[in-house]
Amino acid sequence: MGVVNVTPDSFSDGGRWLDPDRAVEHGRQLLAEGADLLDVGGESTRPGATRPLVVEELDRVLPVIDALVAEGALVSVDTMRAPVAAAALERGAVLVNDVSGGLGDPGVLDVVAEAGAAYVAMHWRAHSDVMASHARYDDVVADVVAELGRRVDAAVAAGVDPARLAVDPGLGFAKTADHNWALLRRLDALAALDLPVLVGSSRKSFLGSLLAGPDGTPRPALEREDANAALTTVAALAGVWAVRVHEAGKALDALRRFVVDLVLGVDTAPAAAGDDLKDAVDYGRVVADVVDAVTSEPVDLIETLAQRVADVVLRDPRVEWVETTLHKPDAPIDATFADVALTITRSRT
Image 1 (tube, rainbow, N blue to C red):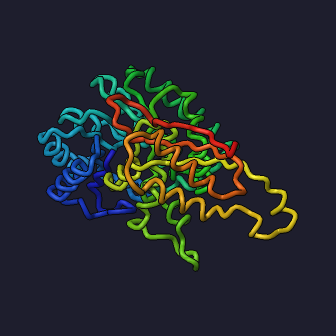
Image 2 (cartoon, rainbow, N blue to C red):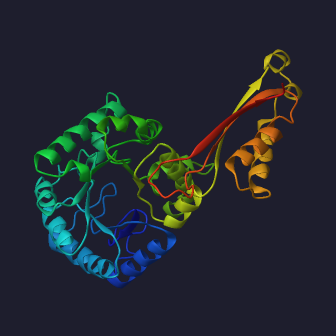
């Protein structure tokens, strides 16, 4: 899902695409990079943002939706207002991405149900100007799953087709950085809702904090894409339905690569007893050798590549056995899937 912010004040690219023609061109670029769906929004939800009038939001998004739909794009509208959702669906949008999960304006659920549209319910507690004060949880994962479950129940009760529902854990919305990381570690917990999952981590402040400089200054929003590409891969391996990104190309590049997991069988007693690096496996060297193995001469079979990786790891005499798992999230298979992986175990004996 490629982000098209038609706003003057979004945290990452506010004003860059406010002009409708520029927003449409940006949408075309996202499609060219490989985005499947364009999420057009006219209201910034950054912390402290002031809400635009409904007429302002409509004036921002409708010309862009009209143009992109006319060119054959699949378009979602990022709104928590029923009048905006209704107008966008009438103009050809196929999905309403509601960051409030129907709490901001319950009428959105009625609009989606009547139109037979798809709907993403995000976990949300309060509007941007006060949401920071609501970042209190007993157990953030359990609480988010439970609260999202209630929003799903409300959507179904309003008549939204359960087969056209998805959920979003709402990273950054009434959540601290620690809350976000906890949710990312436990994306599997959302499986209890038995619905597709959308994850939106792109350029958010917790990535800026993760990448902060030596003086603690957060990395600027436009310089967080590489970290988000890594999270895109994590999300794909966790089986999410979609990721919401500002740069589709980098996210897809990450998915087109192999992900390698290694488990090494090593007798650590000598290193532990002597506290001497010469008795320990040089894990940095292992990683470098594996990267060389994966990026060297191409092969046709994942089985061949897995064996090559195992062979280079076993060059270190301290490694007694190795379990190698190769993930290929972008395998050339004509089906919907999260990941293709092969695991082999090889030993010296």
